[in-house]
Length: 220
Image (tube, helix red, strand yellow):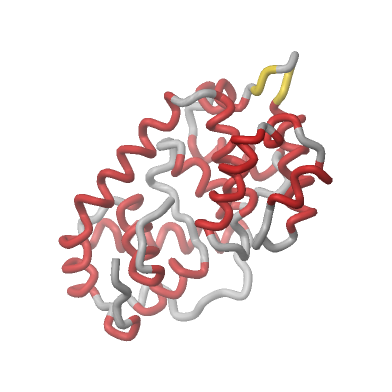
């Protein structure tokens, strides 16, 4: 998938780009919707992927998590065993600790209970806040990312640097904030929702579209 001239993004270009990538984007969103049918171990892997993504490339993060799934360390390894596999991921030792901490938090009687906790929730916004409060390594962006990938938070915004840059280019926000606390995150998320409604593109689709505009790929 080729990259585009980042200076040319406007509403018309956005709609044209969506027309060219809609089929691939909808296929990926359908995959997200099916993820809750996966095993508890697979769902936990998605959580670990989102823990790893801050300031790191998503493709590198997923490659590392996939390796840890294959060798079993994601489910049994200590921090010192996991960290060496987080190659190319910033703060690898800290994130390895977060993975181990999350595994311990969600494990009861030797069984990962993350899937059951997700299924028990009826309010996606409350669930996001609960994840942020209880899982070390998850902020609003990471929790939103995880819930979107589970097909549960398809109306949530994943406000990473790619999305924020393109929201600025489109005039949705005036400047890229140095940081996003909860209230600022929710305000920016609301502005992105207004854009989605204006152009008639579902939020999950819009996120993948804006991300692909800058990265040249549709990933996760």
